[in-house]
Every structure is written in structure tokens, then in C-alpha cells.
Image (cartoon, rainbow, N blue to C red; front, top):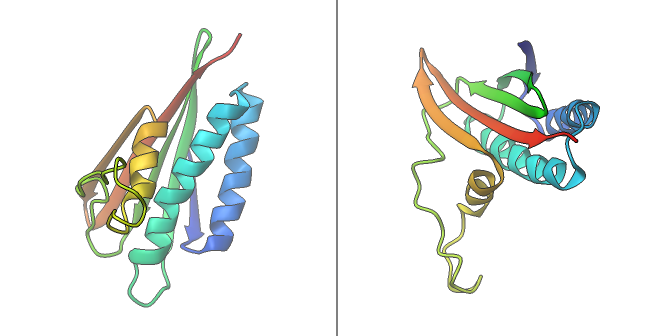
Length: 140
């Protein structure tokens, strides 16, 4: 398990996205799954950047590991922040049958993350928001 501590900023998002694109490519993740992962990761990280800290200053602990089991691979990530407790998974999914004009704002990014990832969970533990998720793929 590798652990990084980064500032909760959009610059950190760019750096982490580049890191995970490199990791996914190194382990043979297909490009379409990398793009799904990028979208999901961005949505979850940006929620922390935008909402975790009232003064806009804080950090995120990023833990990650790649698991290999035969042709099966998985990237597991955990994002932890010490902002106000907030479970982004508790909101109801948006009604995507409605037009953009009819639909309430918000929630679409987390909805996409739930669709693009193989697992995702939230917990509040020891003063930290912790969102953990996993993306799986097979290599030829």
C-alpha cells in the first residue's frame, strides 16, 4: 500500500490523475477503463476540494495499491480528509430520464463514479471522511 499526503487542490488532482494513468497503463488497464476511472476519480476528489474544508485549505491522504490475481487486476484507492463529515453516497441518484433543465443540480458526478467503479464505500472513522473504491480489469 502506498500512501501520499496532498493538498486538497485542483493541482493535486492533475498530479494524482497523471500518477494513476501511469499505474493503470503499467498494469495493462484498457484505455476505455482508464477513462472511466479518470472520470470517477476526478468527481470524488473534486468533491473533497470543493466541500471538505470551509476555508478552502486542507489535505487529503491518498492510499492505493494494485492487486494481481492471474489475469485479474484491481486498483484500490482510499481518500481521507478531516473536513466536515459528509457521505457523498447518501444522496439519491439523479433521475437521468429527465432533461438537464428538469433535473436538480448536483449528484451526477457521484452517480457516474458509482457506475464506473466496481465498488465504492464511505465511512466516517476517527475524525476522517474516508471514501474507498476499486476498479478491476483483466489483461490478455
